[in-house]
Every structure is written in C-alpha cells, then in structure tokens.
Length: 87
Image (cartoon, rainbow, N blue to C red; front, top):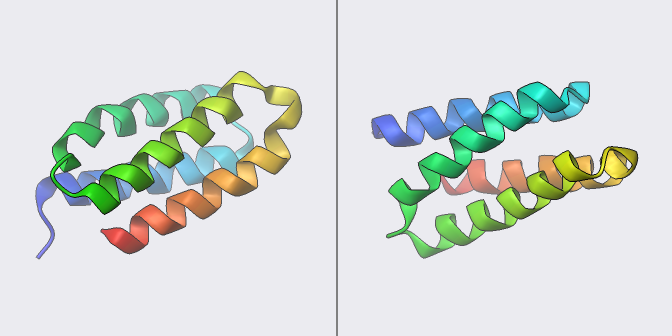
C-alpha cells in the first residue's frame, strides 16, 4: 500500500516529467520546488533519498540552462523513471 507521501511524490514526478517533455520551464519549476519539499519525507530511505537528490540536481541544471535543455532533459526523464521504480 502506498503512503500519501509516496502517492503525492509519484504525481509530482509525473507532472515534472510532462513539463520537461513540453519544455515548460515555469511549470517544471513549480513541480521541482514541490518535489524538493517532499524530499524530507524520504530521508530515512537512503536509496530513494539519493535518487531524489540526483534528480533535483539534474532538474536544477535543466532549469538554469535553457540552451542545454534537450540533453539534460533526457537525463531528468531517466532519473524520474529511476525514482519512480524505487517508490
């Protein structure tokens, strides 16, 4: 059974992925901030916490460098899939 935090994180990650696919920086930023806030709920799970940290670093880079979004976007999408697999 999924906890409410896991369900919310799952939904937020799906939203972040869609925003990255659409190259929608404003929406991606909102999802990024929410995912970052949710991260503290998973600090007791080192594998998930580390995967979220890598995802947040890549997402931050995607948001900061619009000219390099395609390559970084692919990495963000792959990291989203890895985090979802850990949920």
